[in-house]
Length: 551
Image (cartoon, helix red, strand yellow):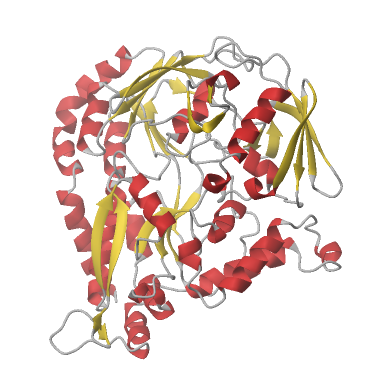
């Protein structure tokens, strides 16, 4: 096994050598001086690299860039490390039955176009989201929200059909329950598009050249105080060498992991920039779990079989991925959620790296390897599947190639396909995949958001619907989402506690190996050393740019 691991490590080293960074590293010393002087030329402005355009900034749809939308739009409440805190709502009350939420709004807030933010604007926005219910089915609150009532100018009431404990968490998300000026509505709503992009946030969208750049300027009337950084530009650049060289030349001065988990430059490139003395590399705590999602519902594919999914799981050497691809910046993940996620500290069966055990599993399941052949077969059908990865992520490509090699060793053929993140998200929703790279929603949203997505046609329904206990899984998910009391003593009078229900849910999907964990990921930022106030939100999707300033 040691020899096999060394072989894998050599493969990774070879992949890394042919990756884009090899060319960049050779030029690093020569261009560090240029980088040092260029970084200083960008004054009081952040110019960040984005692998894709900001797209449609309609906050009630899903094609827009979440980091960009996070600068422009705000929600009623904010999810923080200390729990839910006020944002556009100063306070709120929850009825004893958990079905009515009354929000007391912040006064004096204006949209970027001067329109007042009040209870009527909240009602119009939430009703606009609900008018497109099918699009938002992945977020369970959309299926529970029954009515929105204006009580007075700054008081609004949300009535739910059932108690739903993640209500405040889902209201805090980057989208869809955020607010755009009603003047921007088209045909009285937002599902058919909008006429403008005026939120209440710390930055205004002031320019957009499609597939080139977008500019955001500080909102001088922001209720939270005028941001110190006056201008933020999102510049569209290909991931890899182009972005690395743009940082060196000072054409951009900020890089961070994007909202699909794709990285613009790899770890070695980040270290080179930090070594120049002009840049800092800042990493958040563990935010999410990177994983391979297996489509259990695809009955004409080997992925439908649990034994195949388990063999894939134990045939992956996560230690090598962590050390050789991520230089230890991402840690090994053995379960869908890390233990620091609420309700996720569950005792689950440990699946360690064991390629020989993977071969035995496949043998027992009838997938045999004929003499002189490299791919196993069963009833004349080859053990071959397609694995999709984000073409904008150099690390996903390297992982895919590493996993492909490892699976070849056990007689499994993986056909790799790199696609845009939007295409991969569409495959996830339509079920047109065997295997694909994805990640959990993140620390602020989990476990409830990722688990709620197990039942959603637009998310992980195809992943989970082919397993033997699908019906029981969905029943328990409905049960946990409507739980009102997490105290096990009180809950025992009404059924299982929330903690026990989550444990059952996690045991089912873990046993079925439909979500194959790889590493626990972080948000990583590369920025000028003189940029202060770099912090992280509870999500991997947006950054609090308004708290940053140059010293």
